[in-house]
Amino acid sequence: MEITAQTPIAYLSAEFGLEAKLPVYAGGLGILAGDILKAAADQKLHMAGVGLLYRGEEARQVITSEGNQVEANIDFEAENVGLTQVMDGTVPIYIKVHLTQVDVWIRVWEKKLNEYVTLYLLDPDNEKNHSHERRIANALYSGTQEELIKQQLILGVGGVKLMRALGLQPALYHINEGRPSFLHWQLVREAMDYDAKVYQDAVSESIAKTVYTNHTIVAAGNQGYDVDLMKAYAKYYSSKMGITADELLAKGVDETGGFNVTRYALNISRRASSVSMPHYNICVKQWPEYEWVNVTNGVHMPTWQASVFRDETMDNMRLWEAHCQEKRKTMEMIQSLTGFGYDSDKLVICWARRIVSYKQLNLLWHDIDQLQEILLSTNRPVQLLVAGKAHVFDQGGKKIIRDLIGYLSNELAGHALFIPNYDMDVGAALTRGSDVWLNMPVHGQEASGTSGMKAISNGVLQLTMPDGWCGEVDWAGIGWPLATNPSETAWNLYQTLREKVIPLYYQRDENDLPQYWIEMMRKSIGLSSQYSAQRMVEQYREFLYK
Image (cartoon, rainbow, N blue to C red; front, top):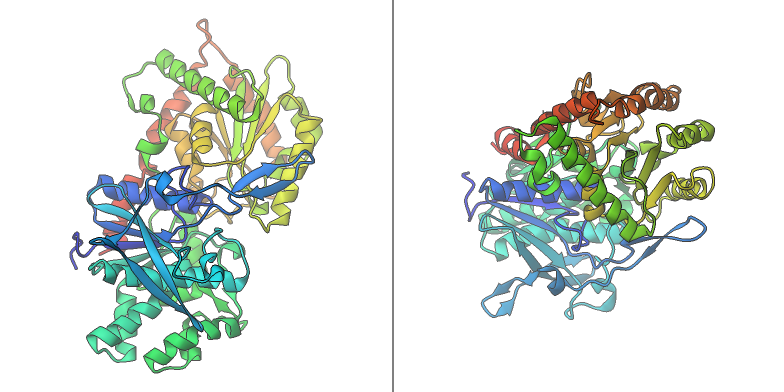
């Protein structure tokens, strides 16, 4: 089917990162989804994004004096962030989603990117629902298993119902991770109710309309649910199809007897995409029975790349001056947020992303004496910047933050800063105003990662584990790969900083220019063209949507 205004791509995601003031994203997955919508708008590709309108509950990170992360609510009103309610003439559109014994009424908000792309956000917080149902989408990725199932049903079933309410007939449904996969239930029902299909034919038709992108092989990102709990929610839908709840759920039941959302998403889609070549190789090995294509992630360059770095005619002096100016702007922003400044002429190393054990922020202080020696050098000083949030229920991630704050208050005081409440604005500043972007996840567990793509587009050099997208790159003369052997990574990090990174930054000519460093910056900016969201969306059209 041709992609048109009436037959768009319906792109469903549990989160969308379009701008910092719209709190419907938690991290890289959502920011990627926002970048996809922006790139589709640039390319005039008709796309309808569908997500949930979270209310900012537990969305703000606060660090206590003891170094503990606690969560605070954001004061959020949809009208104040540029959202408008979707209307049918003068009457608001509401759609109904059945959850066990109750009908939940969903109003819809929209944010138009341009005439080709609109983001629709489903909102159960309205006067048609009882207080308990109104709170279903207050917090992102937070709550009991049952509360998360309710969110996913509203997203999947409600997303399909919304398309019909808007008079749209999507050429294809693209589910970003497995959380929207319950759209299959509504697609099957519609094929049976409106097109008089028998169940098996309706299933085949739904699968033919659905593609899926997997973003992680880490267990926490491939959530599972208790089958008996799932049956309570499946019973109503299965009865409408003339089958049992067990039959409806069968495509998601794994060898342990649990309901696995990733398995379900794979089984209800005609094609699946990975997000980097290393991730593709793992997916094909782990799930060989499915049809896989690879589309490496990309970032929306007009959003993340400072415009000055798009000028390919700059000589080395101008390029360095532009970089130093970005460093000063970032320092000023951090000072306004934290009350602490630093000398932006120092070598500035940044680690910023979601704080979770497998991303190994704690490797930095594997040997605190070595890290202290590196940062506190009087001849070649280094400034360390760290930002990121732990999931509200991730006690391991919160302990990493607590340990870090302890070191910042003692051994590393005056030479390292933590920037709280990491969001899109902070991320943009850090990926423009650092010298080195540090990335050191457990090798084989980072499906892609995108923050480093933003950094290289601004000439920020990579000190990175060669995993995810970084595993696709030959870093010779561009950046520095870290040892993949877990027992060697921390020592290799310290050695690379002491022997390669720091000396090169402070190796200056008679004009105080680090000429070789600048050439590496130039190569990084050139490399970034391969990791744009424009290229990503073009490849979606070629490999996933056809």
